[in-house]
Image (cartoon, rainbow, N blue to C red; front, top):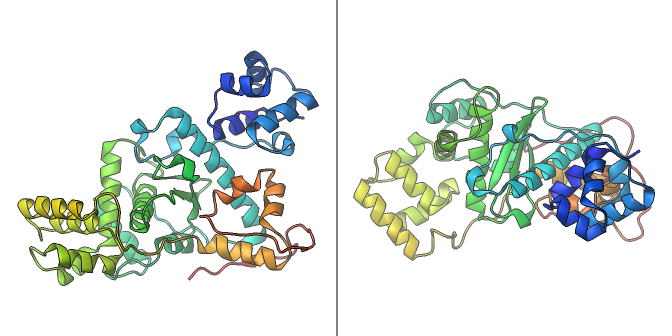
Length: 361
């Protein structure tokens, strides 16, 4: 029996309308609508045509129902600049990410969530609370993806085709999720991860996730979390020059522009000095990118899980098959990590028995 919600999810994942799908697979738009709304059941041949057009295995459409990720649950960075079709596409990808997390949780003991949901503290206070709870003190934050994973946040990557979506986050069944773009600089990726942590902490359960105020608060949280007030004041001189900022940004592994903005917020740069420094950095190419940047941060949980699966003869292709999705779809969630099967390895399902514990450093 076909699961209607999966037809809609696959179509939204491919960012196509009913009319576009109709033209591609040669099935009337009216019939497709009836299939998605459970008013009719497609024949085997019709389902095969739909599956081919949407580039999903036929088995995907007959598996159990998938709960969608609602728009109200997602903190999009620039919702007004992101088309509804793109929003639905990345939310569909997020729903598949939730399925992958459930699959992994059945086989591995994943870190338990330890992300506080706070009331209405100021963003810098919220950042200090989380840093204290996680034992970071005033030191620079370590690898942000590893840090989030160590505290039970499920972190996945976004399909590069949706480059206009920087990142987003949401809570599902008391589990926090963060999705990050891999098309930005590594420094921007760290800031995005901290920004989404801010959403989870400050806006995750009781307060709205959207709007300029929420975005401003998340930015302030990220700045304070990555560049602690006491540490920046201790290290940076008042009125620092561009060369000093470029050298110091490596301490906190942030962009030159982010450090400049933080110094202005802390009173280390006057309004005139801030504008002048930003202009100089822009001339040097630091507004659009980060020359000589740091290596990109990727998932430790996914790396360890798939390496362990591979050692038992389970390839990424086999995982995708169990999830009833194309292996390419799986790979979009894995930060571009290459998990391929060894040539000639025997096919087998994921190892049975007690769940293996993944230690995140």
